[in-house]
Image 1 (tube, rainbow, N blue to C red):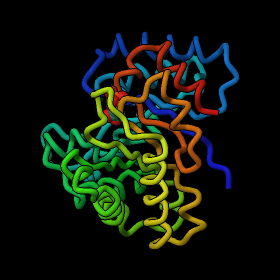
Image 2 (tube, rainbow, N blue to C red; image 1 turned 180 degrees about the horizontal axis):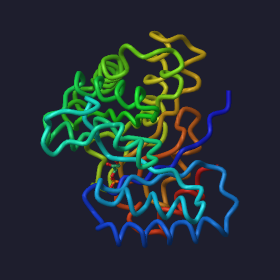
Image 3 (cartoon, protein in one colour; image 1 turned 90 degrees about the horizontal axis):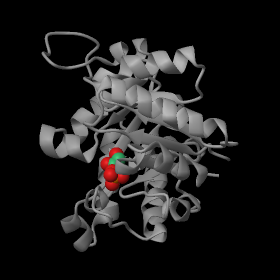
Length: 255
Ligand code: 13P
C-alpha cells in the first residue's frame, strides 16, 4: 500500500492576509520549478484563508488549503468560533485538530478533539489530528501508552472510509519550536504504534491507508531523515513553513 506523502505548513498565529498571499505565491513559484511528488498544504490563520484560497484558485496552484481549528457544530451561538462548513466553503481540504497549543492554551480535550474530527469529516474535509506527549510523559517512558489513548479517543466513531482518510500528526510537545527532536527511529516507533492502534479498531487494511506525519522542529536539514522512515508519511511544519525556501526544501525531501 503506497501512501502519498503530505507536507503541511502550520502558520500558527503568523501572517496577515497580505503576507500569507505573498508567502503562498513564493512557495508556488519555487514548487513550479520542481518535480514534486508529495502533496503540499498550507494552513494560514482564519483571516488569511480567503486570500490564499482565491490565489490558489485563480492561479491553479497545486497547493491544498487547510485551517488550524474549527468548532464541531455546523452553526450556532458560539461567538468567535468558526464552523467546518465555513471552511469547506473557502475550499479548505484539511483542518488541523487538537494541536498541542490548542490543548494547552484553549482547553481542548481528547473528547472535543473527537467531536471536531467527526465534524470535519461530516463537512467533507480531512482532519489532521495532532497527538504527542509532554517531556514528563516521555521521561516516564509512557509515550506510546499516552499517544495510543489520544488516538483511540480522538478517532472514535468514524466510518472505515473516514478512518482510512484520516491524517494523524505525531508532534512531541517538547520538540515543537525547540530545535530538539526524537531520533527518526523513535518517531517511527510512535508512528507505527499510532497505525497499530487504528488497526485494532478499524482493521489493518484501513490503518495501512492512514497517513501519519511527524511534526516538531522539522527543518530542511533533518526532514529527509524523518521522511525516510517507513511509517512516517510526511510532516507538519511550523517555523520552517513561514519561509518559502525552507518550506520548499522540506517538500523536496519528501520523495
Ligand atoms: P515547529 O516546526 O516550529 O517546531 O512547529 C511544529 C508544529 O507545531 C506544527 O504544527
